[in-house]
Length: 137
Image (tube, rainbow, N blue to C red; front, side, top):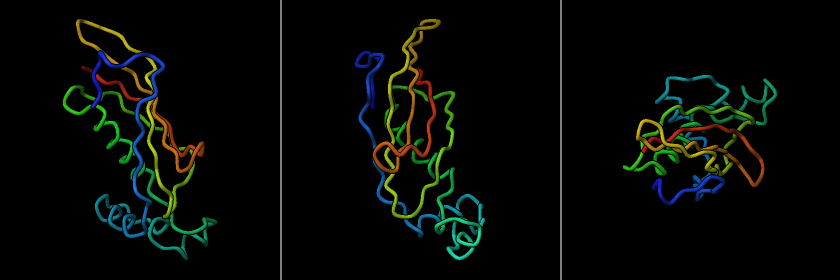
């Protein structure tokens, strides 16, 4: 959990790494989300369309990033204006690491805000997504 007074612009926050993505996790996510596209659950189908095998749902990866944002916000901040852009596929075995950089800090109408630039990597410097969130303290 972060505190406004402990942050400064340009600060890299502690990263968050998830365990390796599994095929079982993809099937469970398909059930939870209702997205049963075989690209996420059937290796043979995924290979027919040119993938190495099944790939993770983009929204699953966004969920990992959301989990990280909520850990940062804790009970001291409310995340707003959360957005993410997908850049590469994630496959079973990939370990996802979420990172945040303090882009900007400001006060408006007596409330404190922090803009975080977000990055999701599956290995060092292999970005699978990026985004931004505003924390309102």
